[in-house]
Figure (cartoon, rainbow, N blue to C red):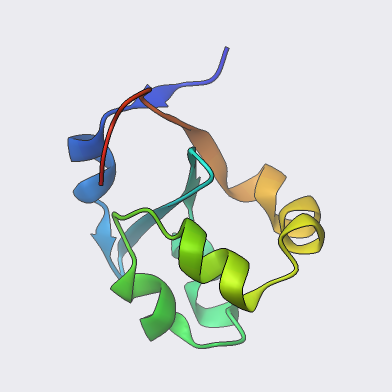
Length: 84
C-alpha cells in the first residue's frame, strides 16, 4: 500500500533542496532530478509542493516520461480530497 501524504506535507517540500510535486494524485520527489530537467530546475521548483498535473501534461508526453522517471521518483499518493 502506498504512503499517503496530506496537502500540508506535500506543500512543505518546495525548495531546490527538497522538491516534491504532484501529478495525477501521485507524489514525486523530484529533488534529485532538478539539475537534469531539460526545462531547467526553476520550472520544477516553481511548482514544488503543488499539483503540477496541468503543467506536466501541457509540456510532456506523460506516459513516456512517467514510464522512464516515475518509478524512481514516486513517493506515494496525495490524500483523497486534498487540495493544493
